[in-house]
Length: 71
Image (tube, rainbow, N blue to C red; front, side, top):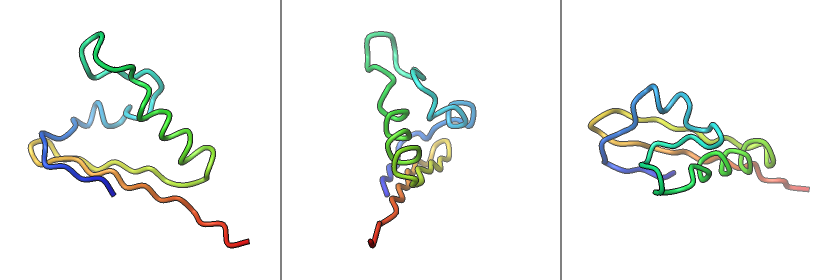
């Protein structure tokens, strides 16, 4: 779990958060790849879950669940 007490993420941005090349920072500040690559690795490659909960003015929480292979 990753949690902050920042300004939160609007529902409009949060609903598209895991899309490739989503940019929420000004041009030249970041690539826009981090969240989408994390999603690809955790969800698509490892069959895990990456969840985001946020409230404006209260902060954001990311929950990462990765399955364990007990074989």
